[in-house]
Length: 306
Image (cartoon, rainbow, N blue to C red; front, side, top):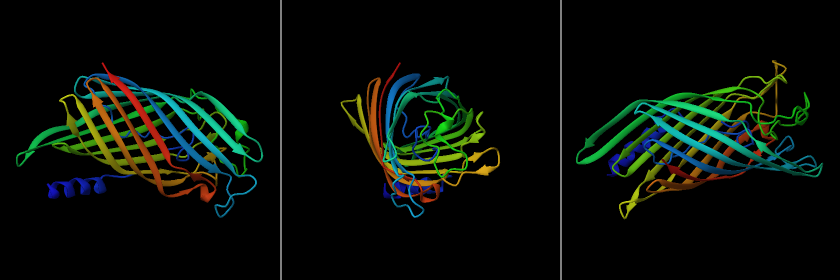
């Protein structure tokens, strides 16, 4: 068994590990994690809580302009398997953004940017390793994000040292490339997700930088009473973003960067019902030339299959 655990861990390291619009803001990332168990369809709610400290000094120190920002999202999401080869996921977020600063507090809430992703089952294989069952699956696909969330151009003064985070949406139509791989040896498994987001310029000539997100989660399924499955999981989440561009040629210094987080969570399934939570502890980061600092994040979800 130890040999197989090492093989699974090495698989995680060798998978291409590569989004957030600055790693945590309201126009944020498409972190999936481990999907709920379902055969045909599911629908559910996800809650995400994220924090940012922005307008930091040139060396990451707080200043009179520094603001503490909290981004909360309540999201309706769902999935639909079409036959054995196709899968569609949809996300409808409602955002709550709050800012506290010496220069003035702020609050806004409203519909975020709706997204749809389509997947194709490129690999689905079952086999035996000795007397133990091993199962592989690989889904690849693409998606689109619609500009349904409100974007306020007054939040961004061209040429200023102010990051353009405090938005409900990007006002741009964007695209994603996605991959999801899962390998399980009996009840021990590894789940890997990768997402690359390609952004376009909005009508205000502002384009958020392209983003790449990847996570690898090792999990183990404990089964109780034939219907209840509990799966603790742990792993890493890596996010990186290019710098934003305004007026089609000027890069925004206070944008872009990367974050590496350690993730711990728990997933539970009972019949048609699933629930889960995970906590993302930031291990290292470099955001917006050290003018932005991302805090730890929490995600909770409930869903039902039908």
